[in-house]
Image (cartoon, rainbow, N blue to C red; front, top):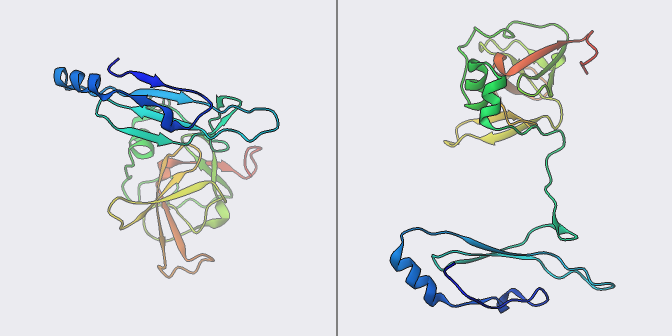
Length: 217
């Protein structure tokens, strides 16, 4: 496959993995493609001894060797997901969301101000993510900011992630469970709220659950 492994042992350090670069050079002379070849080594747990360090070597035809630690338990990769996370492909989201929901939740769009269903809506209940149903805001934190979008001064703890926009001018807020775009958060605008924050949220990113519903908080 373009290189020769001269020595490899699961009980020694990564430095014993030796390869002959000459065949790689010959391959590169015939092709412009760079195909990575991965050699994995997992943990070995001898009785009454410390686990051997783990590593992953990726040897590409470009001649680069990368080393990276990974988490294993008993030789099996352990993939950790955020509690309550909802991960779907973009094709799956297109199938379950309306075109406008997809544009805003998955493509980070914005609805026109003053047109949203919940802009001037103040019933008691909980606002959940329209994509995955995760509770995001209590109605007791909603206030009339006059901005044209639903405004909240805080979200339910752990339900919302914050990430700076690429231009660094604003801070995006997303559903922590599915990553759906909600809007942006602003601070220090002088609103008389406990946090002096305004979560400016697209109505279409939300689904209201009345307080008398069994699914509300």
